[in-house]
Length: 399
Image 1 (tube, helix red, strand yellow):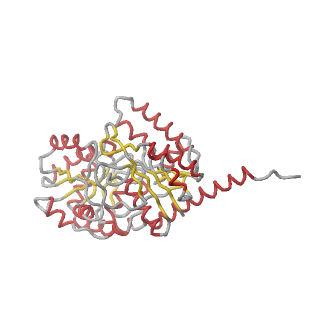
Image 2 (cartoon, rainbow, N blue to C red):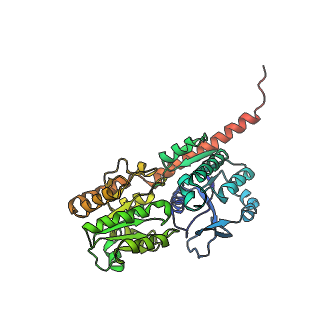
Image 3 (cartoon, one colour):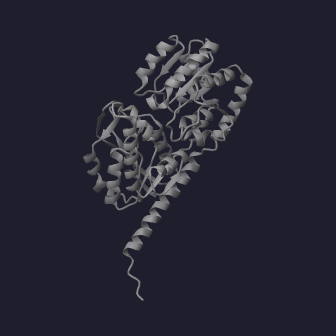
């Protein structure tokens, strides 16, 4: 199969969408499919692009310096080149320039178009346009999402929660639940001791870990407030926050107000296939409290490394955590969350048991299996398009 993907984000921009695209793309190519990706060009050099990644000139985005906006005219200019490739389907990954350009490309290439809905914009947009009332931004997000979903042949949701949200918006386009799976490399044990020796002055400190985008919608403020209660019981505890994002400066200021300067550590983005694995292994516990996740891939990555998870369970994290045994699910209450963390930090036997169970939970989320499910979505979209064309152009029945 020949697949054309288009996205407003991709590496070197690190987030769940970039990871999802790379994971599915690698699996699809390993199965023998051709996957071309159209993505923004970034100011940073990208060393590992292959010949089927097309970078589009882009400009910065207001209030979000990590992201880029592709130039639509440069995408439209690709049509003659893309027509020669005879693609079978267009797969849109993000709802900005990529959505409108992707729908247009699919029409010009005369192929079906499928779209993944990775982000719960109803709760996301408010943080980036705070001057507009939250209710207005929620209504706008719902209307735009419903309109975009009507423009494609089929949708992919990473979780049941996102599927339910789309259905509540009035979306009636066919939706398949296809989470992002884990590559086998994610199960190769990292070296936590090596990471601690590099970043932590006292390598035996009880350590909490958050990995991911450092953004307002991730509810990291809650984790910082919770950590104050942990410090009251375990004064030498350390909280490592690994990642970058628009809330980083705000969270640094909060951290300075809440705790001593060496109790909360901020670490930049780490290479996903080397040092990030070490980072996951370096944590005694992985903590998470986002309310807006459509899946929560970092939870699976932590579990694959045998790091016990303490987390609330909202939106897409429900699918990941519901039947997991290497995790502890808690309510979104700072004191209750801190109590669960403190008890686990003080109970090495229970932590070890959760650490042994966590990789078994993560193993259920195989990238190969999830890619098989994505292929079925592609085939369903192609089959439906062919059926529609046959009905449209079939000769009238004679009596």
